[in-house]
Image (tube, rainbow, N blue to C red):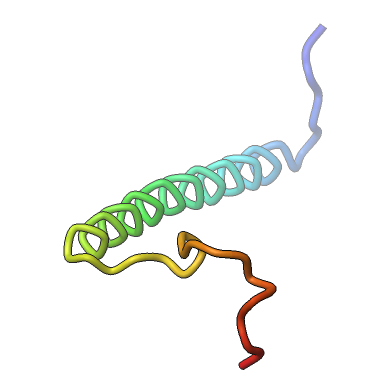
Length: 65
């Protein structure tokens, strides 16, 4: 029992392949972009720059900006 896609089978398979390629490219881009930002963050932290979220103290004692 096979899958009968009719006369449009080539278009359907090409569309699935294109979507799979785009999704794979997006995943690869997200992984590489995340690695780039992790490298930038570690470089900044090694130079002594700290994240605001890592600041000590309660946020309620700060003045509004």
